[in-house]
Length: 119
Image 1 (cartoon, rainbow, N blue to C red):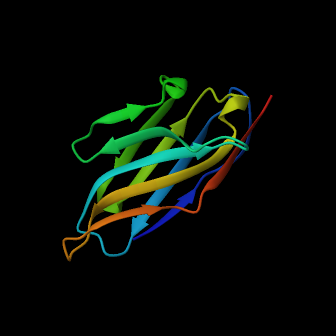
Image 2: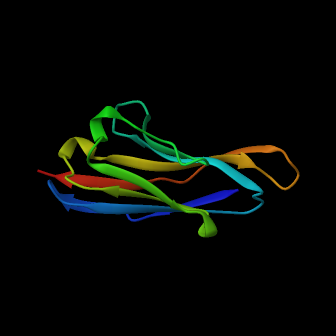
């Protein structure tokens, strides 16, 4: 299963960006898709996750500013990021977990997209 991210870039503090992540390949069912980020010198951290039943979970640092959503027909997940802060600067990675048509589990990561917020 391949994940392709898009939508990163450079934005001023207070601005907005929308990230997209499209999954393709041998997919029977996606159980969850989410976004993580990794800033220089820091560990990768969960930003937001969206499960099959519609449940969401956000990092405290992004609650009220970021919104995760999905288009099931396109196997695509989005991350709308508003009121961006310089501390949101990081490489953002999409991940997906699910089941293949052969009924085996999969877990995949995207290549990452850079988000830079200037002050």
